[in-house]
Length: 239
Image (cartoon, rainbow, N blue to C red):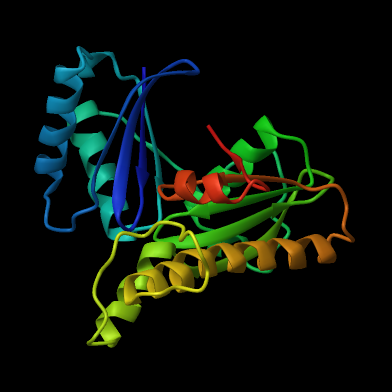
């Protein structure tokens, strides 16, 4: 069995693989307050509850955009599994070239998106990852990573707006029935949710233009992708 750990700014997703089959996965809060031992206890309890014996884990892979938490999980792997984990980064044999000026600056999340995208889909390919940030990763017709874009995520942007504007309040984000809202809630839903989709569509159109409008496949992933995909038929939900 392989333990895989995806450390994001908001959540950490933990999965257990038997060869290429995902046996179980869990999502926990990415907390700087937890110690190495606490992360081990959380993981062990989750595995026990799923009937997974941690002694059967023979490898650990970590993909992280939070360096401090990377260190914690590396220490956990060494202490409790006696395993040196594979930490996803530009230095690995990825099966593709990173055609950017500073390959070491490409985040592990984006490397994973690119490698998985190349394996699962045809290319050229645009991968839209809707998380704390909304990122766009581009694979060219040769199957190489050529860069992309980063914008504030759907929730990140809305919370910052609400924090700065004293008369606005937090709302449940969903696509509005009409773009011309009749209440403050509808105004926010239209501007934030529909506006974010318009941003995604605009970035995609501009990327396509730079790719000389080749036939480009587009996939979406990330914590907020399902709601966006329901209202944007040009995106294919990545499973």
